[in-house]
Structures are given as C-alpha cells and as structure tokens.
Length: 132
Image (cartoon, helix red, strand yellow):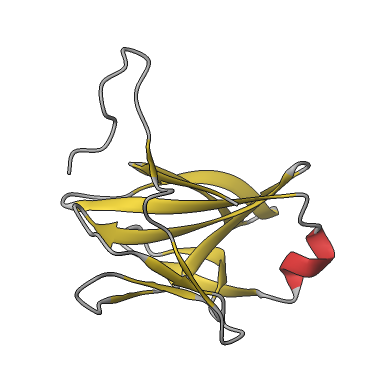
C-alpha cells in the first residue's frame, strides 16, 4: 500500500453513460489522503463499492463505505472514494489540512497506522502541492 496526500482525488462518478473516471477537488481547508493498492482486482473492489453522493459537487461516486480513517483527535473520515485502473485501486479520504496521527480502519476489525509512511505530494517545481 502506498499512502499520499493530494489536493485532488480520482473518483468513479455516475454519468448518463455509466461510471466514468473523474477528478474531485478537496476544497478549502481540506486535503485527500490517498491509499493506493497495487494488484487489487475489480471483483474484490465491487463487493466493497457502494454509490454515494460526494460533496461539494453532489456527484454520485463509487465508494468504500465499510472502511474509514481517523486522526489523532478521534475525528472519523468516511467514505473512502474509490477509483480503479489496470494496476490496482485507490481509496481517497477527504481530511482537514494538517490532520496527524492518521489510522486506516479496514472494516474487518483491523487498523493500520499511516504515519510516518504518509508521503506529501509535490508539484512539478518540487513545492508541496498540499499546504498543511
């Protein structure tokens, strides 16, 4: 599993043509914590995926509603927005900027401390793409 922070999250959104790949902005004062899983197949993801409305755009997106993220202050972040490609899948959780002590709860009674593995995404110039 690879863990990152990002201003944008890839999502699978509902359109008139079915599910399509799209990007969602985190919004002011928020950032996405992105969990990337290599080699996870589509069949495994489908059993976890539900359709939920995503704010602020109120688009319908595939999400993992069984797992969640918590921070050091005990705040719970859910749902995990789901995106898949040929190499694997990713879950993105919208958190507040500067959230620390992040723990991912997999929905199967296991939890995983995400820091210090958390990687800050940088732009092409090498500057942090996410302001803490």
